[in-house]
Length: 108
Image (cartoon, rainbow, N blue to C red; front, side, top):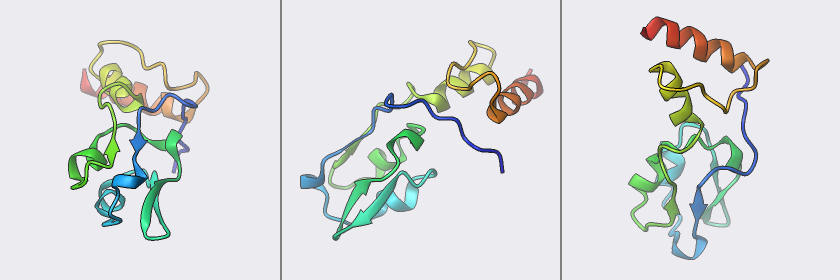
């Protein structure tokens, strides 16, 4: 499996522990395992791994998780695949660049 390349400290993910009831739905729906359970509550474990898909926010019944979708690396890669603009979240020598480039060519 190819390794992921992350930008540091750009993710819009926010978690409000005081609102979390520990149900864990966000753990189930997160495709990158960004969150983890600790002491009966959920906490952010790997913030920079978040692709800002919004699954956690849409599924949290308490509103304890927020994220601005469409601004992160996932959005940039999708826009690159659609030929709109180059993804700035993939380093020039990163394995992901090849994947994004190949996917963009397949889609055109």
